[in-house]
Length: 177
Image 1 (tube, rainbow, N blue to C red):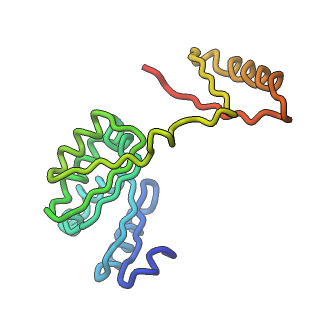
Image 2: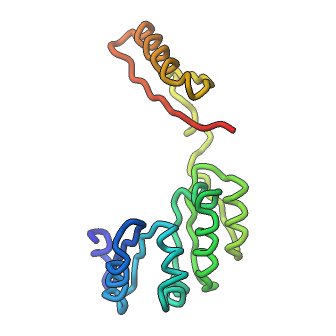
Image 3: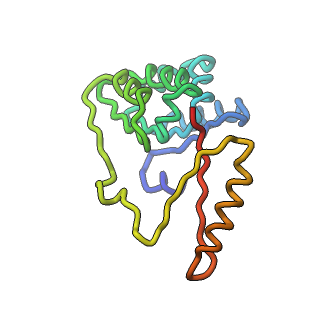
């Protein structure tokens, strides 16, 4: 609401799974005369597309579509809902802004399905992706049942190698297939 307050006639409406369906409808109706900044989760937005009379027609008027974490939205879990949403947004002058840390085949396919020209912008220059010399990076692939032991071993090793006080440690878990 604070950010939207800088733009006359722009009203934020937030609809997310788990919220009251009737409150969603009331928020949308209250903003009917305004331009809406719709913030929504894919599942709830897809539900409104399918169940709320007039929602699809109103959504078709969207001029700017912003999807963050599009690699997740285009993937297996949200792909069907995301494609239904993008398919309902038909204006030829619509601008789509897709943000993703990775450019998977799913993302590329979704971009292709939106039609029109595409411009890919890489926000990192090659040197931006480099790691400062003072930072030591390591990785280890372990089975799920061995993760706790592996983390403790890494912490103990970092503590024994630390020269300037306690070490700063970042641990990232990923799933491999």
